[in-house]
Amino acid sequence: MDAEFLDDITLDLGGGSEIALTLILSLMMFAVALGLRTEHFRFFKDNPKVYLAGVLAQIIGLPALTVLICYLTTPPASVALGMILIACCPGGNSSNLLALFGRANTALSVSLTATSSLVAAFITPISIILWSRLYTPTRELLTEINLDTVSFLINTLLILALPLCLGMLIAHFAPKISEKLQKPLSLIAGLGLIVIIVSACLQYMPVFFQLGIAIFALVIFHNGLAFLMGYLAGVFSGADIPSRRALTFEVGIQNAGLGIVILLTQLGGLGGAGVVAGLWGTWHLIAGLLLVGLFRFNDRTRLHV
Image (cartoon, rainbow, N blue to C red; front, side, top):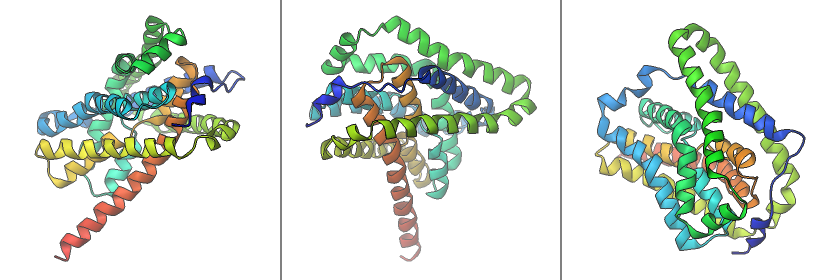
């Protein structure tokens, strides 16, 4: 692969951006918690087999698949770290919208997104360290950058879990206040994240143009297998077609924004990892829309048979 130079590049936005990103990440988790409701987790009771298949595919299946892909394709260490980082992130909220457009089981999609967002506050930092240790180049890379594992876990848990718990308490004891706060805070966090990511892309555009086709192909391949894993989780759990589609979107659409923030604030902004996270965040939406078209085409075809 012609991108070994990425291991030597770090993304540094300067100007207090690390503090801003940390605040945005905490605000994101707080806003997510404000929107959590008991009914979002009803599939745990109504259809536990399909629900658990989706949860396990996201939390264990995708990171394990990613490590296997890394061993098969041997990407540069920072690129592999980016792949593992994204695989350990929770599902993205855009999966719910794609599920709606793709005539999937939207309620199941919302349930899985809520679950992964809740679990992410406690599991994501541990998962990143665990799965990164299983691939030799990323394990060596974390040693080279002198990552303090204990400090990383504590800092990330505080940034993610503390605002999540606070938001859940407000949602439980003051639901009317949480309803008023959730949408504007989500919008502020989302816009802030977009501004920082766009500025980073503009600043490091020359680096992106040096990548070659290999990195782009790897991201597409990785994301394609993630979608496939979600679909197969639905098949093996005996899910109906709308629920299979929901699982497809949930495993294939990851919260790349969260991954980018963790990378820039906690992992030193490693260049290859940043490129993978950025490309994934763009491509998974394109791929998701293509799947929406495919699903709707299949529906029309069945109606005319």
